[in-house]
Image (cartoon, rainbow, N blue to C red; front, top):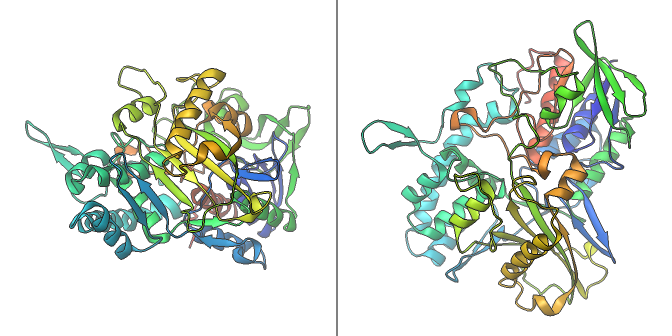
Length: 510
C-alpha cells in the first residue's frame, strides 16, 4: 500500500483519489479551501441554489465508469441524471430561433432546415460527419491514453480537408472559423458552430478545424443535468471518496513539494506540517508547481508545458445568478444561447484585437440556464436562472472594478430579456461572479477556465502530461492532459490512477 498525497480537491483530484483508494492505496487530499469540488461550486441565497461552475454535463459515461469501478452504487443510483431535451434553444441577432433536439443527428438537421432554409441541415450534417473522423482519430490519444512522448503528431489537424490554399500557392491548416464559412455558408450556422468553441473558451479565429469535434460530441452523446445541479455530482463523488476511506484535509494550503533520492516524497503545508508520501498528485495549474519545487520545472524542453507568468491568457467567465419571482413557464428550454450581434467585437473583447487590447463586449453571446428543478428554488412560485458569458481573464481586463462589472452584468441582462421578456419585473436580486471570484475559489490564475485538449494547431491546445519528469509527481485535473471540462477532469483521474497502479507502461483506460 502506497501513501498518496493529492493537492487539491477538485473533480480530477477526487476521481484520482477514489480510483487509487480502491486499488488499495492510502490517499490523503490536501485542499487550500474549505470544501471539495474545485470549480464545481454552489452559491445559495434565500432558498435559491446555483452552480458556480459548469451547469451541464457531457460524456456522462466517464462518471458511470468511475462509479462502477469504485463502489457498488452506480452513478444513476448516486445522483438523478436527466437528459436535457431540447439540448439548446439558439437565438440569433436577425430574430431567427432554432430548437436543437438532444443527441439526434437527424433531428438537428431537420431543425436547421426549418430555421435556416432547405439544405442547411445537410451542410451541417456533412460537417459533423467529418468531425466524426476527428473523434475516431483522436479519442484514444486525447482522452483515453497518457500523452504520448511523440505528442507532436497530435499537432497535425485530423479534420478531413483541413488545409486552406494560400493566395500565392501552398497550403496551410484551416481554422474553425474558415471551415465554418467554407462549409456552412449561412452566417447563423457559422455562429452556431463557433459558439461550441467559444463556450469552451476557444477563439474560432485561431482554433483548428478539429474543434468541430466539440459540436459532434454534444450532438452525439447528448447533454445532461444532475438534479440539484452539478454540485450534486461533486457531492456524490466526495461521498464515494469518503466511502473508500480517502482522507480530506481542508484549509490545508500546500507550500512545497519535497524530494528524496530524486523522487517526489511529500508535501510541506502552510502551518509547518511535513507530510511524507510515496507519490504526489498535483491537481492544480501546473504553472504553480515551480514555486512548490524550489524553482524546478517538472518538464523538459520539448515537453508540453504550461505558460508561466502571472496569467495564462485563457478566458474566464462572467456569471449572473438571478432569483426571480414567478414560476418557470411550462415548456421552457433548459438552455438558451443568445448570440452576440457583433461577433468581431465579442472575439476582440475576449481574445484581443491583435494590438493587445481587450475590452468587454457590451453584448456578448450569453447562455441562459433555466433548470426545471424544484430543488434549486424556495418554492414553485420562484425560478433560479443563471446567465453566463465567456470573457477575458482578470489582468487583461480589470474585473475588480465594481462599476464596470455592474455595466457588464447589465449587458448580460439585456441579452437575457430575449429569453425572458418580463425579466425586469421578475428580478428579486442578482449576484455577479467574475473571474476574480473564480480565482479566489479555485486558485486559477486570472480566474481562467481550462479548455479541453484538441489536436491540431501545432499542439498549442494540448495540456501537460499526467506523468512529469520528476518521478513520483503526477498531474491531474483540468489543467493537465486531457484538459478542462467535467468529463475530461474525470478522464485525468483514470489516467493518473493507471500510471500509479500499473506503472509508466500504462497504455490507457479501457
